[in-house]
Length: 138
Image (cartoon, rainbow, N blue to C red; front, side, top):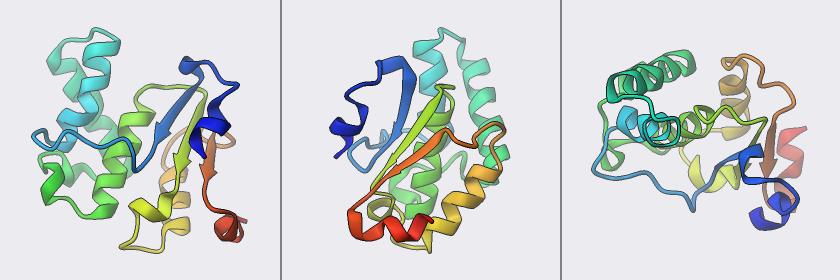
Protein backbone atom coordinates (compact mmCIF):
# COMPACT_ATOMS: atom_id res chain seq x y z
CA UNK A 1 0.00 0.00 0.00
CA UNK A 2 2.64 2.52 1.05
CA UNK A 3 5.18 1.63 -1.61
CA UNK A 4 2.69 2.29 -4.41
CA UNK A 5 1.79 5.72 -3.02
CA UNK A 6 5.40 6.81 -2.65
CA UNK A 7 6.76 5.38 -5.90
CA UNK A 8 6.79 8.71 -7.71
CA UNK A 9 8.18 10.77 -4.83
CA UNK A 10 11.89 11.29 -4.18
CA UNK A 11 12.94 10.24 -0.65
CA UNK A 12 13.33 13.85 0.48
CA UNK A 13 9.71 14.67 -0.46
CA UNK A 14 7.76 12.57 2.05
CA UNK A 15 7.96 11.67 5.72
CA UNK A 16 6.13 8.53 6.83
CA UNK A 17 4.24 7.45 9.94
CA UNK A 18 3.63 3.71 9.74
CA UNK A 19 3.07 0.71 11.97
CA UNK A 20 6.02 -0.80 10.08
CA UNK A 21 8.44 1.90 11.29
CA UNK A 22 8.92 1.18 14.99
CA UNK A 23 10.43 3.36 17.67
CA UNK A 24 13.68 2.45 19.40
CA UNK A 25 12.39 0.73 22.55
CA UNK A 26 15.39 1.71 24.66
CA UNK A 27 14.98 5.43 23.95
CA UNK A 28 12.50 7.96 25.32
CA UNK A 29 10.01 9.74 23.10
CA UNK A 30 12.21 12.84 22.99
CA UNK A 31 15.31 10.76 22.18
CA UNK A 32 13.50 8.91 19.37
CA UNK A 33 12.52 12.24 17.82
CA UNK A 34 15.92 13.85 18.45
CA UNK A 35 17.70 11.12 16.49
CA UNK A 36 16.49 12.72 13.26
CA UNK A 37 18.14 16.16 13.58
CA UNK A 38 21.10 14.58 15.34
CA UNK A 39 22.00 12.24 12.50
CA UNK A 40 20.39 13.79 9.44
CA UNK A 41 20.99 17.48 10.13
CA UNK A 42 24.14 17.05 12.24
CA UNK A 43 22.87 19.16 15.13
CA UNK A 44 24.43 18.54 18.52
CA UNK A 45 22.57 16.46 21.10
CA UNK A 46 21.33 19.45 23.12
CA UNK A 47 19.85 21.23 20.08
CA UNK A 48 18.31 18.02 18.75
CA UNK A 49 16.71 17.36 22.12
CA UNK A 50 15.43 20.94 22.32
CA UNK A 51 13.81 20.68 18.87
CA UNK A 52 12.18 17.38 19.81
CA UNK A 53 10.77 18.87 23.02
CA UNK A 54 9.41 21.92 21.18
CA UNK A 55 7.59 19.62 18.79
CA UNK A 56 6.12 17.53 21.62
CA UNK A 57 5.00 20.75 23.31
CA UNK A 58 3.32 21.98 20.12
CA UNK A 59 1.49 18.67 19.70
CA UNK A 60 0.26 18.88 23.30
CA UNK A 61 2.23 15.86 24.52
CA UNK A 62 5.12 17.44 26.43
CA UNK A 63 4.53 15.05 29.31
CA UNK A 64 5.56 11.95 27.32
CA UNK A 65 9.10 13.19 26.63
CA UNK A 66 10.72 10.76 29.07
CA UNK A 67 8.47 7.77 28.35
CA UNK A 68 9.98 4.81 26.56
CA UNK A 69 8.09 2.85 23.92
CA UNK A 70 7.01 -0.03 26.22
CA UNK A 71 5.47 2.49 28.66
CA UNK A 72 3.50 4.47 26.04
CA UNK A 73 -0.14 4.14 25.13
CA UNK A 74 -0.87 3.58 21.42
CA UNK A 75 -1.78 7.26 20.98
CA UNK A 76 1.43 8.40 22.71
CA UNK A 77 3.44 6.06 20.47
CA UNK A 78 1.67 7.51 17.43
CA UNK A 79 2.44 11.08 18.50
CA UNK A 80 6.10 10.15 18.91
CA UNK A 81 6.18 8.62 15.42
CA UNK A 82 4.35 11.65 14.06
CA UNK A 83 6.81 14.05 15.68
CA UNK A 84 9.70 11.98 14.33
CA UNK A 85 8.25 12.40 10.83
CA UNK A 86 7.37 16.09 11.26
CA UNK A 87 10.86 17.02 12.42
CA UNK A 88 12.10 16.07 8.95
CA UNK A 89 10.18 19.12 7.60
CA UNK A 90 9.33 17.44 4.32
CA UNK A 91 6.62 18.75 1.98
CA UNK A 92 4.39 15.70 2.41
CA UNK A 93 3.47 13.58 5.43
CA UNK A 94 2.06 10.12 4.78
CA UNK A 95 0.23 8.30 7.56
CA UNK A 96 -0.19 4.63 6.74
CA UNK A 97 -3.01 2.62 8.34
CA UNK A 98 -3.62 4.89 11.34
CA UNK A 99 -6.18 2.47 12.79
CA UNK A 100 -3.43 -0.11 13.24
CA UNK A 101 -1.57 2.36 15.46
CA UNK A 102 -4.45 4.23 17.11
CA UNK A 103 -6.70 1.47 18.34
CA UNK A 104 -7.19 3.14 21.76
CA UNK A 105 -9.04 6.28 20.60
CA UNK A 106 -11.34 7.57 17.84
CA UNK A 107 -8.48 8.32 15.50
CA UNK A 108 -9.84 10.48 12.64
CA UNK A 109 -10.66 13.29 15.08
CA UNK A 110 -7.39 12.76 16.93
CA UNK A 111 -5.39 13.12 13.71
CA UNK A 112 -7.35 16.27 12.75
CA UNK A 113 -6.63 17.75 16.19
CA UNK A 114 -2.90 17.03 15.85
CA UNK A 115 -2.83 18.50 12.34
CA UNK A 116 -4.43 21.70 13.63
CA UNK A 117 -1.55 22.12 16.08
CA UNK A 118 1.12 22.05 13.38
CA UNK A 119 1.66 25.24 11.38
CA UNK A 120 1.47 24.89 7.63
CA UNK A 121 0.20 21.31 7.66
CA UNK A 122 -2.89 21.94 5.54
CA UNK A 123 -2.71 19.87 2.38
CA UNK A 124 0.49 18.10 3.23
CA UNK A 125 -0.93 15.17 5.23
CA UNK A 126 -2.07 12.11 3.30
CA UNK A 127 -3.67 9.13 4.96
CA UNK A 128 -3.29 5.72 3.35
CA UNK A 129 -5.82 3.27 4.68
CA UNK A 130 -8.01 0.41 3.59
CA UNK A 131 -10.79 1.34 1.14
CA UNK A 132 -13.52 0.64 3.68
CA UNK A 133 -12.06 3.30 6.02
CA UNK A 134 -12.00 6.18 3.50
CA UNK A 135 -15.35 7.52 4.67
CA UNK A 136 -13.79 8.18 8.09
CA UNK A 137 -11.67 11.00 6.67
CA UNK A 138 -14.28 12.96 4.69
